[in-house]
Image (cartoon, rainbow, N blue to C red; front, side):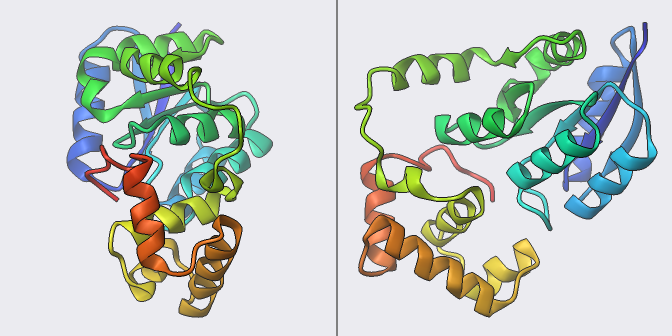
Length: 216
């Protein structure tokens, strides 16, 4: 059986690289590509495929929200997350939303074919690096940490605040108004019981939440 794959990533070079890896391996067909959230939804609605390789950080909808929508609308389509985010928090949220696999971009060249093959067959795939992070997290305290109280959208805004993005920049990246972003910021501060942005940044550094986050 030829595995039909859809690729969703806002970087053309990444899409080219993924397509190159899959087309050079036997048994795969890249059936379509998208570069943002709206385009991804349109693609999965119009193109039959077995696996969607999805970047979490594209313009438009939050990646976790996209996974939920896709799982609701196209339950047979398997979602393999391919992202720069190597943090265990992102992987846990992605799987909870309905992803079938989680692969970091640094591992893609070596693991993409195996990952797509496994999720297409109905399995679950976690890269070796992520599996090690999950194992390490089992030793962490069971008590809920402040950032774990955040919704997926709030967690995304929290990450962007800690990366130094302004309200305007966050709004443009997520297609939200400045007023809406400010509301999210207020909710984050309230849920995490933090007095200001600087406290959020210190918290993120102390808990090493985004230490491997090189790209937003």
